Amino acid sequence: MKGLDEVFHSLRLRIFFVVLLVGMIPALCIKVGIIKSYEEWAISARKIEIQSQCNSVSNQLLSENYLFHGNSDRIDAELSQLSNIYDGRIVIVDSALKIVEDTYDTDEGKTLITPEVIQCFQGHNTENYDENARYLEMTIPIINNVEGNGQEICGVMCANVSTDSIHSTIEQLTLKVDLLVMIFAVIVIVVAVVFSRSVTVPFKKMTDSIAEWGEEVDEKTIVKTMTEYSETHLIAESFARLLGKMKSVDKARQEFVSNVSHELKTPLTSMKVLADSLISMGDAPAEMYREFMTDMSEEIDRENKIINDLLSLVKLDKTEAKPVIQQMSINHVIELIMKRLKPIAQKRNIELVYESIRHVTADIDEVKFTLAISNLVENAIKYNKDNGWVHVMLNADHKDMYITIEDSGIGIPNDCIDDIFERFYRVDKSHSREIGGTGLGLAITKNAILMHHGTVKVTSKEGEGTTFVVRVPLNYIE
Image (cartoon, helix red, strand yellow):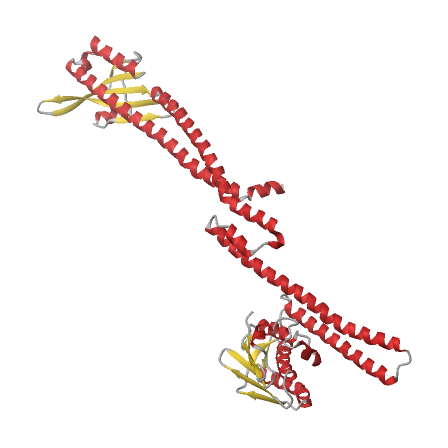
C-alpha cells in the first residue's frame, strides 16, 4: 500500500499523465469534431440533393397534370427510381390531402393529414433528421406558377429516405480516424515518457549526488551540478545555503562540546592534582592542607559557575519555554542591579555611575533581562582597571529603550569583537581564568536580549574601554 501511494505521489508519473492528457484530449476532440462535421455536411448535402430531385420531379408532375389523373408511366418510373436511389419512400399529396402516389403502393387514395404536410401547404418546408433511426424526412411543396395570380401550392411531395449509406461512410471514417488517434496516442505516450524522465532527471541526479557526497559535499559543487533548469538551480542554491548553515551549526556544536568538556575537565584536573599532592605528602603541615583545600574549594566554585551558566543557556535555547513577560519599571530593575554589584566595584575602587534620562516602563521577563544587564555591568567591572569607572545610562523613545554600559577597562581588540558573543570565547584566556570568567556570560546576554526581540551592539578600543548599547522594544510582541 505504501509503495502504491509513493507511485501516485511520483512527480514523474504526474508529469506523464499531464502530457498524455494534454496530447490526447485535443486529439479526441478533433476526432469527434471531424465525425460530427462530416455527418452534418453529408446530411446537408443529401437534403439539397433530394430538394433538387423533388423540384425537378414536381415540375414534370405539373406539366403532365399528374395530380389530377395520377397516371403517367414516365413519372411513376422516375419516382420509383428516386425511391430506389435513396432507399426511401416518395408520397405525392394533392391539394385535397389525398395521396395520389405512394412508391410503397400501400396508402394510395388515402388522406394524409400531418403537421408537416399542413405546414408545407402553408409555404413552410419541413425537415426532420432522426439520427438513431437513420432516416431523413422532408416535405417539398409542388408550386404552380399561375399567370396573374402568382404562385399556388397545389400539392406536397413527402420524401422519407434512409441515411444508412451516410452512416456506413461515417463508420469507415471513424475507423480510419481511430487508427490515426491510436498512432498519435503511441507518439504521445513516447513523448510523455521521455519528457517526464527528462524533467525529473535533475532531481534524481541531485538526490544521487547528495547520497554519494555525504558529509564531504561541497556547496559550490551542488550549485554547479544542478544547472539543467533555473528551478533546480534555485533549489540547489537553497540547499547549499541550508547545508552551509548546517555545517556551521555542526561546527559550532562540536566546538561547544569540546569547550564544555575542556572547561568542566579543567577544575576537576586541578582538584585531582591537589588531592594527589596531599595524599603523596603524608604528614603535610596544616597550613598546606588549608591552602590546598582553599584552592579545591575555588575550583569547585568555578565548576559550579560553569554548570549554572550552561543551565542558563539551555533554558534560553528552549524555544518552547515562553518568557514570563510583565510590565516593569526598568529604572528600578537597573537600580537593583547596580546596588548588588556595587560591593564588587568597591573592592577595586571602581566608580559605578547610573544615569537615568527619563522614567522607563517596558514589558520584560525580569529574570532573563536582569541576567543580561547584570552580565554586561559585571563584565565592565571585572575587565576594568583599578580606580576606573563604569557608566550605565538609561534612555527611551516612543518605541524602544536604550541601555548604555560604558567602562574605562582593558578594551577588546578589533579582530575579536565579532566573536565575543560566541560560547566559551575569551579575548584573554589567562586573564579570564584569573577573574573567574567562563566565556558564557555574553552568550547568555545575547540570547536573553534576542528573546526580548532586541539587539546588542559593542564598540571598543583596546586599552581605553568598551561600550555596549542594548536596544529593547518597550512593548513585547509574540
